[in-house]
Image (cartoon, rainbow, N blue to C red; front, side, top):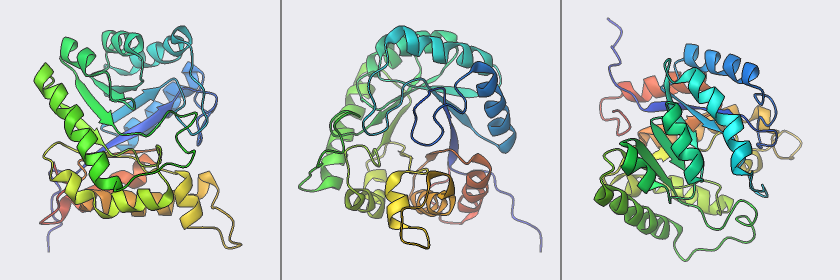
Amino acid sequence: MPTPTVEKRPLVMGILNVTPDSFSDGGEWFHPEQAALRADRMIAEGADLIDVGGESTRPGARPVPVGEELDRVIPVIEALSDRVRVSVDTTKEAVAEAAVAAGATLINDVSATLWPVAARHGVGWVAMHRQGTPATMQDQPHYDDVVDEVAMFLRHRAALAHDAGVDEVWIDPGIGFGKTATHNLELLARLSSLVEEGVPVLVGTSRKSFLGALAPAADGSPTPVGERLPASLATITWAMQQGAAMVRVHDVAATVQAASLVGSLPSSGGAQ
């Protein structure tokens, strides 16, 4: 029997944190030479996009000055933009502007405020939901109905972007950004309702802390960050089956395999 040809699959966004303090890989790719090696590997593994970030958004993180963030991300974006599609992970207008000038074509915006930059420059924009700021967002987050509230927020922001002239808009429920583990699971369980909004959905669960707690080590302690690949794959595969059109991950090769499988399913909602 011939092997099915996978023509379409959910997109895989590889994470490239050029920061000293990101929760999973802070400091590993901080210098441009290290970042270039990491990018080479992700490109070889099949990443559709590489998301370059110069400011950690982990719980408790503090803001980085604009100039410092620019120094971190712009050389990397310039080096990559002729080889792979690049997104910039930022909340700052000045950084987004400079990143687009350097070759980024997608603004991955955890603040969901930068659609005017995307509109001015004709690039894509990701609106993510979060409650609070990185410094405060895990201080007792509360929702009456997390799925409905997140959907309402993202629907509004997507409409603002479309009205401003942004052609490529994505929405991200913001797993782990001002949410408890229960909130995260509710969002994943009902992700198809967010997909039904009609705007492409991006999901990022890779290596996040709730996975370490919900899938603990044999001794009952939270699974260490570097050992959360199985839980990461389980949640992103679920998300893709529910219709997520892109996933943001640290482990590109394994995710591309999973995405290819999901994309080959006859009724896959995540296929592009």
